[in-house]
Length: 519
Image 1 (cartoon, rainbow, N blue to C red):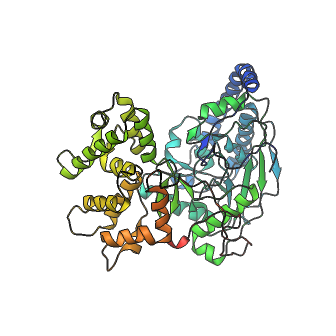
Image 2: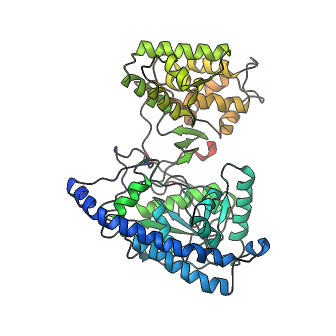
Image 3: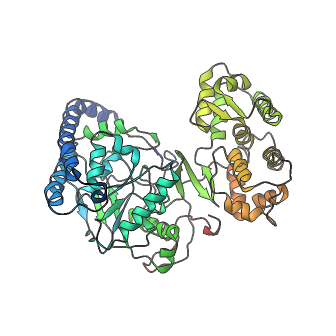
């Protein structure tokens, strides 16, 4: 590890999606003084260089037909505009306080590795890696094309664009990605952040399979920020992008190290299994960084870990809800009474299972609406909550009932036709209610618990309480606070197997990886 690049998991950072800039009083005073001078100057200079790039980036494809834009830019459009935009891109980061980038190792050429996989992904400032990689092509959300300057740069880059919420767009993006990665040098080298979101860098979260679908060799690239003060990171909870920008631009300078690891050539097994390929590269990079490789992912803007296909919230909504209710002075008997009202309403079906913040305020006998809004925010993006999710996720952690009775109540409620069995979709809804977040991949659980194509309450209870994988879900996430432990840490020691032809094994970095049979 390089000096200043702290990556150990701590109680302060229980998972990779939390980060706060830690400054001493002296550092805060110095940052305030320097920032008041440096930040306006640096941001103005960066904006100036961005504005110069804007029209130049548009000129590169100007006048080309859609058919011509679907091919890689060559000839004078490349040799004239590419060096100019590369120089201006470097000028942007120089303006923000990145005077140099230390490069270790050798960047593989296009034929050796069609794609560079970069981790950890910590911030929008990671885009500086595009300069030493000669503006490699990236994958981006389609919505970013609407942003000033950024949209022009994505067009210049001939990026692969995807609307994440549109299945058709995702399918087209995968096809385009595979076409480019298997073009044998026709398309330029690509660069991808396989984590898919930003973290605090203290662990590598599960890699998405996109960069590995084509089964071509990849070159792992490590990013480090070896500075006395860690300022660049921008995560789900904690420091915002504006704070990251302010604190970084307030430093005299910020160091960045880019390290190219040897090209990773997939085995036949890995080429046939992109998830295995992604997991092995993740572990290799984690070992090189000296950090855990975890099964954490960001799913629907909620940080979760994956176990047996089930998404386990790193911050269980039921636990946070209980904490909020207790802070508002509700005692156990009052919480129990409120839960009884909720399940009664769900069973009656007269008013539906959705409740607005105002209705929730009344159901919980809260003194003010803000707590109800906060609870709604834990379960949905609007000012409403599905009372089934709220009831079961809170009840599972509150010691008001045992798990067998709770499962019976949930099974009865979600077996809407009273047929004595659940469909795959109903099982997803039931598990989503128990855990407090939507479940999208419960197929393995459904298969394990089904008998002759039917999933009964007895078979589901048996699997959840006796199967090694799903028993862990129940013990760690669906038990009362006194009986059940807190969510597990980012990693735990374990041994691994399943070697590949790059000399890497499952769990080679010494951290827990769950049984892939059920994932």
